[in-house]
Amino acid sequence: MKDRVNLARKQFDSYVEAIEGFDGQQLKNIEIKRNHSYRVADLAVILASKLGLNETEVYLSFLIGLYHDIGRFKQLKDYNTFSDAKSVDHAAFGIDVLKNGNFFDNLDEDQVNLIYLAIQQHNKLGLPNQLNDKQRLLAQIIRDADKLDILRVITDYYSNPKATPNHTLTWEMPKGNTVSPDVSKQILKGSLVSKEKVVNELDIKVMQLSWVYDLNYRPSFELMMERRYLEKIYNSMPKNDTVIEIFRKVKVFVENKFIA
Image 1: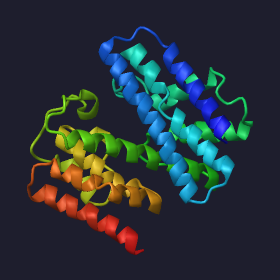
Image 2 (image 1 turned 45 degrees about the vertical axis):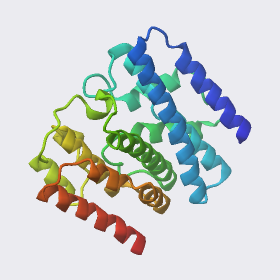
Image 3 (image 1 turned 180 degrees about the horizontal axis):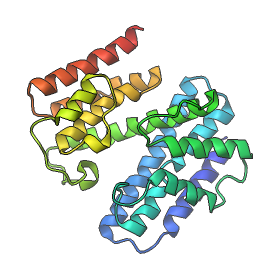
Image 4 (image 1 turned 180 degrees about the vertical axis):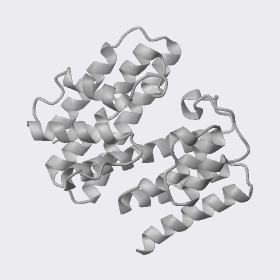
């Protein structure tokens, strides 16, 4: 498996480095996404291994993690943004990139289709009901791994008061001192907060707290708690009754996951 992993990394790097014409800030954003892809791939391997998957399934999990955001690079090139709302669905865009390249020569058609499906679904609010067990397994692993690394990145940012403002993380939205009513309603009823409801930076943080409702596996919860991501988000938020209630709600949910 090690040789196949190294080959995939080389193919990924070759693709990224072949895209030219980026300016200084864009190059920084490219490196952010490249490093994110590496880390998500490694997290996917950790989760797949902890779940007892076989070597082929672990390798597919690695590939899905490595390539889940490959559409981001061409998205930045063509549209100068990572915002899907302002450009294209980066998951679907990435599948087009993969279909037009030679990334999976050592896999059969069924394995490639599993990769495409997991990538297609990694950024959606929820998964379709009609997935079979293998499709759902790989789709859920990438969704967990992706969220865990985004939580790592954003909590590092939130925890550093001297950090340079990063519009990629704050979506160029106003800070906001109160949680929007629709956002509050969604998370307090135990639902994922949809991006469409978010109108300020505080809403973004509440949306990130709501991701606990979409984590799928005990190892994912263990990593999240071990690294104290929820507390770091909460510590960066203004304290009011709504924020305190939201944090208590998600903490109780996570604690109950460990009791079950």
